[in-house]
Length: 278
Image 1 (tube, helix red, strand yellow):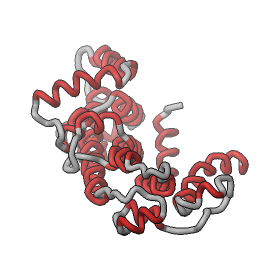
Image 2: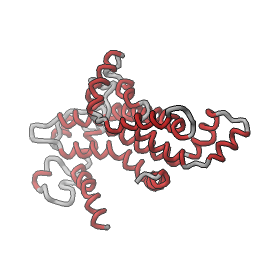
Image 3: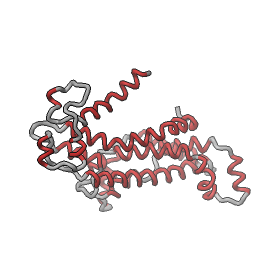
Image 4: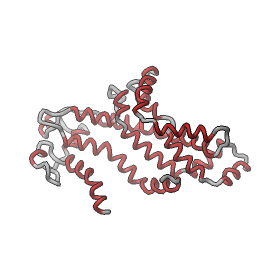
């Protein structure tokens, strides 16, 4: 088990080791397990805390990226997608699990078939729609295709809602509560654990998305952090790739998601087991 954990964590350590190395000195000892020419210059270049002369001296390209602007854009997009997607998915899961209506199971089976559709098939139709709506190069254009429910999220929450006892819902009905009130005041609070799990998974997915933001964002106003890392990578100095700066940028971009997952790991495992997903 210790060996598996060590192998799993090795890439993260190597990213940190490269980020803390001097880019100019990395080629002198590329196999060293410790940082070569220990420095925080890679992080300073990414965060815009280093002058052009200093960046060039340490093997950087001398260019800069508006890191905080891209971080804000990523945060806004991921937060909007997570909030909307969880709300709509929970409402759909409630309808598929607790409400009785004609053709419910057939509609759910058809809806679940969406899991079989590869994401690449929807990129072009989504792009045409976003362009016709005039949302290209906007944050709303990046978030809109992912704002609504996903088959996995609906299936995940439906499994949980189906395991809740009917007596709870019937007691609320006897107290005069309507369906909407039962959903928001009774069932949704009881589903807090799987909802938090879905929030974490959705947020990480939205944060790490690269291809769709690359297709629809062309300026700093709508560019997210994952796309900005590609721009930083393109600022290659004549001496070679700025591996130190690139690894520092990657580490900074991934750090919020690693912390989020570490804080919620136990809850994620518990909710998956309770929902019956194997």
